[in-house]
Length: 193
Length: 166
Image (cartoon, rainbow over all chains, first blue to last red; front, side):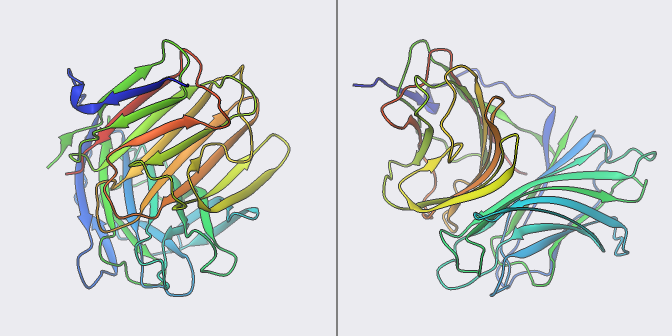
């Protein structure tokens, strides 16, 4: 018989808490949904930012792109390159847009998938450096246990994003590309020193 | 208000081979969980599998994106009885596999649970995956085990962190 090891969190003592990864703010969408969420007045005291989120939108026929914008800039100043797997094949593509588009960052909603949310981890590097255009990388995915959307039983995506602006990032807006975010969508912003 | 987080919850370094590593009594006080593992397997016909809360029903599915040195590809499973690390490939007995699992909003009782994870075996492939557990229950235990009667070798490590959102 194979041995079984148990690790009981309640028995762990001496937790190490560092000051290098700090929670800054969390936004959770309430009943009725929201067109977007925004983190504003972001402090400049960190080196990098990370956003960890779950999201679902009112889209009923497809997995929806998420859109990330900085400092209220809605111009065509964003570029993304992505590598995506949909369970059947891998694809690579790039897009210029009015925000950094992230494939399947937001789950759509069809029968049987009401409780499924897309998860994402967004890293925003050196966000206060005024000598650099700003770079983002994203790991995100959603799985539907099959194919409620044509050809999309699930998606997992690696994305690099660029905002062609050297300004320090002081606000971040996240939305679905076309539809409102549903209740329980939630994004948490962290600072990394 | 900003608050420091990313707290080590538990860690385990195997002193001898083990078929299963269990994280139980997971506190609900965090927003996300991160688990970083570095493992090797006892034989080349095994792979790591995950189950939550003792559920071994057909309530899991996953989608993967991988590169194996010659091509990029994607595969997936539906109605499975577990989530599989490095799906489609057996693991290495000689090279350490490094996995990083993200369990986001794991104690939320309104949504199904999704895990985002990366699997890297330098001699075989690199993979990004999303797994779904079709349950709205809070995750209170996670079991890592080795398929096909395999074991994790001595020296395999499992480190578990909690992140609390403001």
